[in-house]
Image (cartoon, rainbow, N blue to C red):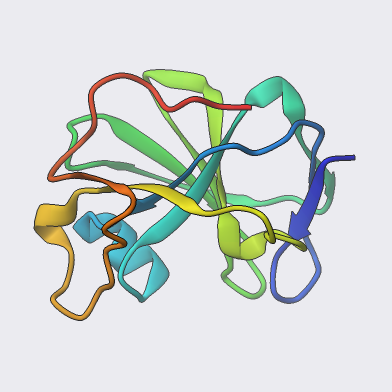
Length: 141
């Protein structure tokens, strides 16, 4: 098993059976609101490499700033945001990096929606900076 993770209370657990190679920090307003922080840090994986091994996540759907619907999954008990996918790319899951049991070795490769980033948010100058939605899909594992 390449990676495992879950929510704060432990009710929901997941497994990823592929290496994670790209982390994006999204600073859009929706990710700020959903996280209660500067945004969301997401690792991308193909759906066939992701599975829930315990519990059932609740779903929330909303049209994002990109104009496409984003389906967000979270724990109904503790509220932890776990993963999401976009309607135009249902085969790619965005796993919230903070829910991984071990994220050592991963680093943010891109900051997206930087035009919405709060002034107190750190944008790593070594990572690619995109003011809005990047062109093309992420490179999932």
